[in-house]
Length: 468
Image 1 (cartoon, rainbow, N blue to C red):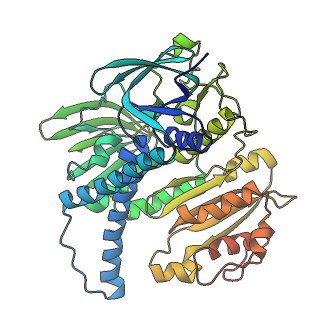
Image 2: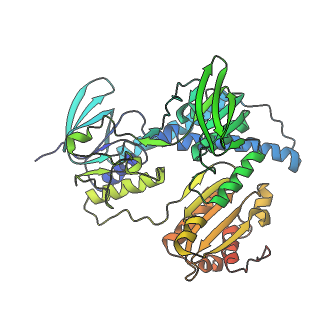
Image 3: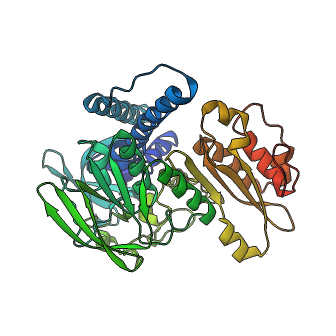
């Protein structure tokens, strides 16, 4: 049978657009169908614009440090919100244009529209002009991403109750902001709005911020954020929302006791759910599992072998870099290459200040799996480069196998942790030992030395701290 395309990719987020580029490189005739955003949530209202706002907030913090500690005569005249929005949006436009340029360079076609599966090889597209067309493809890649979870009784209205989409649009800086959820998204926006001028309170259902993260690191990050003026309540269940002309009132059980919180705006950041509705999965014999995700094998194939799924559709962790890797695997599998999704080390980052970056097992998970493990730590307070930055909060932590010394997990709380974690991810992928890291000469003075010294502390021979 002659198909219109070798592959149709539904969704142009960090999974879909990357898969399309790789398919183009491999000589496959490819069509991308994207309903809303070229680059997906990540590029348009997620990863990129939030990191722009986080950087702006951090610069304001650094400016305060420069005035108070370094003697630099700087003046803080507030925030020009329209200019900040234009700067943020300009970065997004530039990256979106970059994706389209790469598609063109690799022969990838794209249509803005809504796609629905009609049969295992046919996709119906309702384009932006309201016209319907059908295309056929030998292979399909489903990359429709996810959206914020909406809680009953706390539905988004875009004014008093925000999702992350409204928060990143920066419609204004509320005098008081209440954040429901202390995951990465909730904490990042708490940091942004606190340093743009809001009084921020965070409510979290679980006993710690960042549930599932290494408990010691989560505690230290919570302490750091509290010192910055962010209120954090854990073991707190929001039970009722009241909206008025001047703000919101949220009733919550705080460790079993009823308490009321008032704010101008409530940001609900309690997770994300995959976008499978309206995709037509029933027409091709596919059904999400009980959690709403599509099961796939190591080549990203669904139970229908020529239909692939990638990114947030396939389950946690819901991370852009995971989606991109899965997109490359799917593209190469379609092209007949012997490729599989075989990732041992999937890093994650919370882009607050200090940043928290992790890869591998938490200390709790490592002890549960291996018993007594070796743990090494090294504080940024003992690192010369961190002191010159004026950012010495936090430490690096390395967890190693009790017998083989193989690195099981690395967690970094501190400046530029998001960049430092790359070395740790490589160490885990290569089955490196703590001794391997410790014996590797790291340049001085740099932040990377905290990893070297934490690795040496695993064996109680770090140089710049007492080894206990």
